[in-house]
Amino acid sequence: MARPPYIWDYDIDESTFREILAGKTKVGRLDRDWAATRLLEHAPYREIVGLLGFRALIEGWPTWRPKIRSESRKRGFDFLAEWIPRRHPELLSSAEDRQAEHGITTAVSLDPRIKNLRVTDETITAELVDGRTIGVPLTWSWRLSEATPEQRQHFEILSDGQGANWPDLDEDISITGMLYGGPARHPMRA
Image (tube, rainbow, N blue to C red; front, side):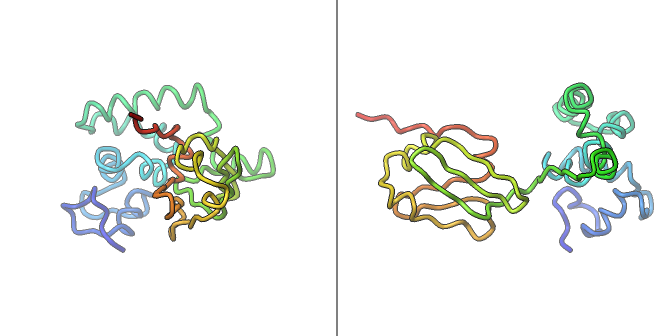
């Protein structure tokens, strides 16, 4: 496995880092607290949540906080440590807890990918590989809004499923934009 950028200065690979983070191994002075601190200081949010999970993040934050040098990261995780338990306590239960309680397992996909895409006169709808279906108004893309129905249907899902491309319209839409973004601005008209 390759070395993630947040451990650029250590001669360990991703697999070893994950074992340290999980508390399964130590390498010299490198233990779980060290790995969590490195992750919290240097990794993107998506990767932090993907590797630690909300429950471990909230439970470990009081221990890891004093070791974080970035004040902006501290403020961000302070907010999460207060907000998640109050507003989304369901994120703190494990998959096993949810399965035992409800007989089902749910998970938040941190790497959503498009499986199928439909474009109508009103919506752009993506079926994701994790089973979710999300949609946004067609008006979020002024190029697609102004296109003919035939042009709207001439698209390709990018090979990694991260988005779609309409080559005739020079339009790209990412799944991240559909989930977290908003309407594209139309360029100023003269």
